Length: 288
Image 1 (cartoon, rainbow, N blue to C red):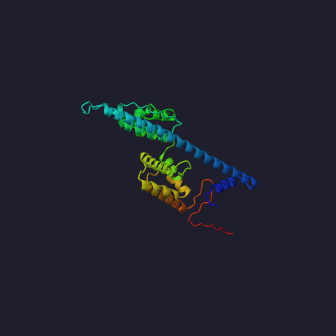
Image 2 (image 1 turned 120 degrees about the vertical axis):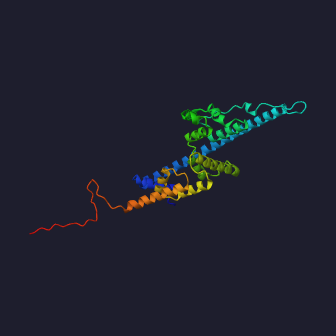
C-alpha cells in the first residue's frame, strides 16, 4: 500500500482518534464509502454539466445559423434589379434574444455563447459589459452590483469577477486539467477538447490574476510545487508566486530561515527555562 493511499490516511486518522480493532476497521470502511460516494457525486455533476454544455452549444449553433441566414438574406436584398450593391443596415441591428445567466447554468458555456453572439453581431467590445449586465441573475448579478463604476463597464473585469465568485479561478482549472479523466459517455475527441478548454482557461485566468500565462512556466511552476514538502508548499502558496522564479525565491527563503533558526543558541524564557551560554562559571570558595 502506498504511503499516500486514502486507506492508509483513514487508518492514521482513526488511530489519532484512539480507535483500534473492529472500531478502527469500521471507521476505515465508513470513510472509504464516503469517498466512493463523493467521487460518484462528482462524476454525476460533471456528466450533468457536460450535458448542459452540449444543450447550450446546440442552441447556440441554431442561433448562429439563424443569424447567418438573416445576414445572407440582408445581403441579397441589398442588390437592386441592375445587380448593383446597395448599402444596408449593420448586422449589429439584428435582434437576438440573449439567454439569462443564473446560478444553475454552466458559467463557462454561457460566456462562450455570449461572446460568439457578440462577435457575430459585430458589437463594440465597449458595449459587451452593459449588454451582459441585463442578463445576470442570482450571484452573478450580485457580483456585478458590487463592482466599481470603472470595473462594471469592462467586460473582462466583469467576467473574471463572476468566474471567481463561482470559484472558477486559475487554480481550479489547474486542478481540473491535472485530474481530468476520460469519461465513459464521451469520445476521445470530446475528452481532448475538454482538456484543452481547461488548459486554455488556466492560462487565461493566470494572466488575469497577474501570474505568468506562459505554458512552460505554468507547467514548471506546478511541477516544482509538487516536489516540495507540505510545509514548504504551504509557505510558498501563502506568498502567491507569479512565476517559477518566485517559487524558487520563496523556497530558498524558507530554507534559509530554517537554517538560521537551527543555528540560534537556546535562550532563557521568562518562565525560567535553563539558559546556556559561553560564559565560564565562577565557583565560590569558602574557608572552613
